[in-house]
Length: 352
Image (cartoon, rainbow, N blue to C red; front, side, top):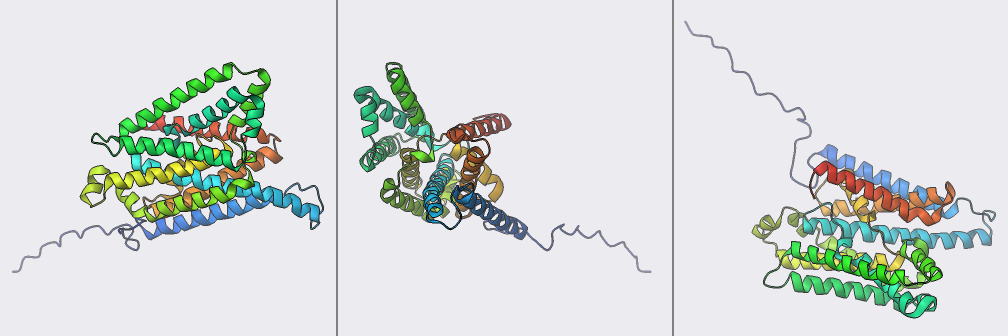
C-alpha cells in the first residue's frame, strides 16, 4: 500500500508579483509612475505661480502696451527666481552627496559671510557713495571671482595635499565664515545710522537686487556648472555610496569631489552675488526633493529639486506680494521655514 503523504506547503507568492523589484533609478514601476506624477504636478504649479506673478493685479487694461510693459518687467523677476532655484537646488544636492551629509549646504564654506564682508567694507571705507557706486557688471564679476578664488584655494589646499581631509576643509570653511562675520559686525558698529539702514537692506536676499545686466555673465556660468554636474550624475550616484565603495568601483574620488565642489561653488557664488544670501533655501529645497523624487539617481533628483525651488520661491513671492503686501520679508519667511525644517531634521536624526 502506497503511503500517501501530504504535499509540502508551497512558498507564499510575492504580494506584488506584477511589479517585481529591479535595479535602476526606481525600485518598482509604481515608484517610476509616482515620480512622473510628481514632476507633472510641480510643472503645473510652476506654470501657475509664474503666470500669476506676471499677470495678476496688473493695473493696466489687458492687451495694452502698458500691460505688456509691466508684464515684461515682472517676467525678469520670475526669470531670476528660476535661475536662483536652479543654482541653490543643484548645488546643494551635489554638495550633500559629496560630503555624504544631508544637513550641510555650500553656505557652510563662508560664501555668504564673504558677501556680507564685501558689502560692509565698501560702506565702511567709502560711505554710502561707495555702496551706491559698487554696482554694475564689474561689481558682480568681482564678487563671483572673490568667492570662487576662496573656494578654489580651500579645495586646492585641503583636498589635494598629502593630508587631504574633507572634514578639516568643512571646519576651516566654518572658521573663515565666522571670522568674516565677526569682522563685518565690528565694521557695522562703526557706521552711522543711515549707512547701517541702507546696508541692512542690502544684506537680505531679494530678487529685486538682481540686475538684467548681470545675465550675460550669470547665465553662461550657471549653464556650464549645471551641465558639468549633470554629466557627472553617474559618478555622483557612486559617490553617494561612500568613499570606499566609490574607490572600489573605479571612481577617482578626490578628482571627482574637487570638480563637483568647484561647480557647486560657482552656482552658489552666482546666486549670492545676484540676489544676496539665502542660507536655508537650498537645504529646504533639497530636503523636499529627496521626499518627492524617492530615488538615488541624480539625473532624476536634479530636475525635481530645481522645480521644487522655483515653486517655493514663486509661491512665497506671490503670497507675500498679493496677500500680505510684504514683499520685503519673503527671504525672512523662507529662512524661517527652512531653519525650522533644519531643526526638525536634526531632532529627528538625533545627530549632526
